[in-house]
Length: 234
Image (cartoon, rainbow, N blue to C red):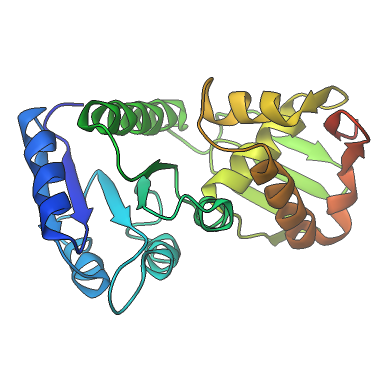
């Protein structure tokens, strides 16, 4: 993915320069800003291929920047990697539920940062390759009053469109495509994000709770198998 445009939103000048230097050295184009407000403006034009977003920002914090980027149709599909010094599970889970794709905890190795960026860009490119070129391709999943269009990234309940984050959609689609099978939390993480994804399995519980709430009556299709994990009802 050399040549991709990376937007870095980081208020600490030393870290911003370190990140920008290593990304440029790895062959990426880089735009760097210091505040959430500047980050939102920079994401408008030209739209970046990925955003490296610090959570602890002055003014509009990183979680609110993430929320706004994912709510904007022009940037909703832009991958976001969070930078956090907190290492607090609740912040990471919140960011992932808002649609962030990965996170890096400070202090971090520049090599690990580059590897994470490359992995997220690869997943984004693979997702685009899987998108249908017309309206007819892609296997639609129908179960009771729930309809899932994988190619369109669209979910309907009783004919009404349900707004899901990218992570929530991937979790739902993964379970629905394998209806009847029970998966542990780690298996769900591996299936959705790939192996060795560095996030606690509690994130899956939080995402399932959010999914059930948004799906309403169709949320009952996601069953908890006590002591094991989750299953999508056949």
